[in-house]
Structure formats: C-alpha cells, structure tokens
Image (cartoon, rainbow, N blue to C red; front, side, top):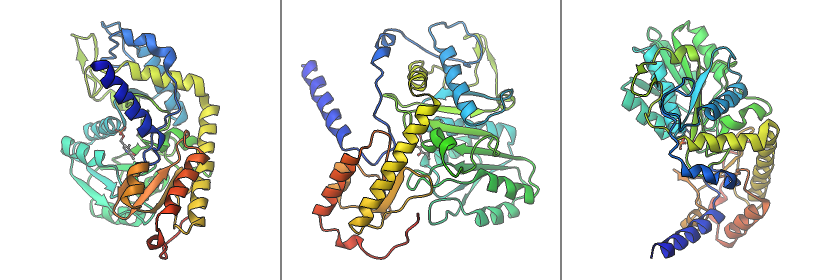
Length: 377
Ligand SMILES: *Cc1c(COP(=O)(O)O)cnc(C)c1O
C-alpha cells in the first residue's frame, strides 16, 4: 500500500533528521503557509528581471530575493543582477560561465580546499585551471597564488575564492587576492566567491573577512537550503548586470531572455527563500548566526574538555576534529575527509544535541584521539 510506504518513509526521514550534525543544512523552517502554492505548475523560466509570456511564475518574488542578497553583499545598487538557482553548484557554474564569456583565454585558479562542484564546472566549461595550495586551516595559500599568477601573468585570471570551505569553513580573503592581482598588474581578472554556507551570514562575521562586491568580488554564490533552510535545494547567484548583458540572448518562444543555465526553473524555491527572509529579516539572520557561533564555541569547549583536539576558524560555525569511529560517524552523519571530521552548528543545533554527542563520544574509547595536534582558535 502506498500510504504505508509514505508513513514509513516519513518516519525514516524524521529519525534521520534528529541526529544530524555533520552537514550544513538548517532544519528549523516551517513553510506550511505556502502549502496552497503546490497546486500550481509554477515555472520561472527566463530571466527574472524581464517579462515573459509564461505567467504562472514568481519572478517578482525572485527579484526581491535577489535584491535582498545583492544588498547584503554590498553590490552596486545600479549594477547588479542574479537569479535563484537549483543550488550552490549551479550558482558557481554561472559565475564561472560569465567569467569565461568575459575572458575566453583566461586561466582559473582555485585552492585545493575548493568544493568538488567547481572542478566539474571548470571541466564542463573547458577552461584551463591551476590548483593552488591551501594553508593548514583550509584557506588559500596567498604566497602560492602569487607565485603561480606571476608565471601566467600574460593571461587573464579567473580566481575562484571560497568563503567558508566545506570541511573547515575557512574563508579566503578577497581583498588579499585583489592586492596580489594589482601588484602583478593583471588587469584582466574576475573573482567569483563561493559562499555556499557562510555567504548568508558573512555580513555579520566580526571581525569581517573581506568577500563581497565592495571587497572586489564580481559574482557571489550561496546555497539557499544551507543557512536559510529550504525543503528543496536552492541557491542564489548575484553578479553585475553589465556582465550578464554579455551572455543574454533573446528567445521568442518564451518572450524573454535566456540568461539562466536551465530553461524551466523552480518557481517554488524563490517563494520559500522569500518567505524565510520576510520572517527572519536582517536582524533575525544576525541572531541566527550569533546563536550558531555560541553553540560552536560550546561544542569546541566540550570536545576539548574530554581531550579531543577540536578547533575552528575565526568566526566559523564549524568545529573541526579528528575523524570518529564508524559508530559515531554513522549515527551523527559526520562528513569525513582524510583524517578530519566536523560538526556544523546550524541554527537548529542545540546544546542538548551537543551534550548527547559528547556523551556518545565519551562512551567509546577515544584514547587514540589524544595525540598532540595543532589547535587553531
Ligand atoms: C555545499 C557547497 C557547495 C555546493 O552547493 P549545493 O547547493 O550543494 O549545490 C559549493 N561550495 C561549497 C563551499 C559548499 O559547501
């Protein structure tokens, strides 16, 4: 019976959601008020800023979402553009696409801590690229970047910076990158900032780590289902209108401009993001971030108390520590890479959950995690 299957599936999802500390997705949302919108075949095809023949769409709502993030990222009010994507990966693809259209002969530089979607995107776009070393905390190695750029200074440079790497939430400093480009006199350059998780709270990180348009980024991407939270994966990409104009082509079938990666586009996810923004607001977003930072601090302190070498990058909501035995890893769904793992203190993560996690870890023999290791603050 299909109803039994559904009940079973629902229970399975509920259970999996309870002990979920290792991935950056917020779960504290309630979109029940939007239920009636599931009755319509909403499709945002075409450019959200252009009118189109297809009217069952949420373009106006989508534009407000774009406006919100453009402002948060300090874009030039007279020169920004963007759209709601299917996620951070598509947003990164868009940033790189625009960059390549602008500089077809460019080289892309990205650090070894960059998200895997970027490598695939670079492959899809067929752009030559060079991997830059990362520092131990996951941040790009500026010296290696400078040395590498120096050898290729005759070529336009596309730099992909990450604001909050996937494993350690390290944040590349866009102003330092900009300074290197200036020093080497590489005028033809483009900076795309991947802020999948941390871009949404970057404005509140104190002290601020440069990443936005005023700091020198040409486009910024975020994932909507990460810090904001959404039942459907979503993302936002913000760039400059003047750059978008280079890739726009008019399509008479839809009566709009084909400026986006996919044709048919999800019209429900802009609605979710818009609704969340209305409910949370700038102030609420800041409070969510501060709450997450406080929980991260608590988590780190509790891990250190039981002798586990936990650390986190400045302003991060991610706590990094040596990888855990499978029992813990599977129960708490801890993403693990090489010999490290992490807890991401999303706004829904509570002290009680951290305590339950610590109790689990204490129960197992963790003597092998006690060796000396570097601790960052
Ligand atoms: C999650 C993540 C992405 C990909 O975003 P999706 O929304 O999953 O497509 C890209 N970059 C970083 C740094 C991420 O953490």
